[in-house]
Image (cartoon, rainbow, N blue to C red; front, side, top):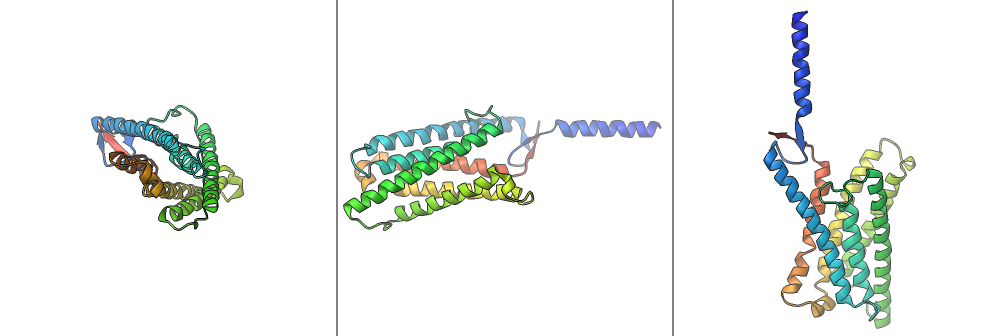
Length: 248
């Protein structure tokens, strides 16, 4: 009887100690100081990604002078869609630095779909203005790397939205395929976002952008889209990694 009580008390202490252990999203075992430094850096980086995505959309809209031509609406719509809505639609799931971190996941999913719907509207509108501008000027379509990357990004975004519809309405698919589809959705979302980032950067090599922005500012514009892309990539990849123990 005494041995069994000792064993049970030992098991209870072991269970308590295992439940008291904290875990971090990445890496091997963390000390508490390293963990909080990591959290602070992530929060700062997410806030910076928000600021950069908003700033790029605003600056692009100012430089484009919308309304001066059919083409002027193309960079405005694409920067609002792929530079702002796509970024915000992903970052709202971040626990660090998201203004919606206290909202339930149901609200975040709804807002994610709202941003993705705006992305598709802005993307289709910007694509239409580009086609109309090319037709008016009688220039050939899809002759540059930027235009080809843009078509690929649009196609990947549409396919990603279709994949998301099945996640939004799980009754359309089998229960067993739901976790796998969620993994595909996140992975394809990362691919679509990286394609969008490359397309935005390639736009800065076009004749219009190089004639509008020159010197040091051109290099700043070229490098800025990389930072939100790194934050988004870190957020998505961390969602797949096993959690590691934090040591005090």
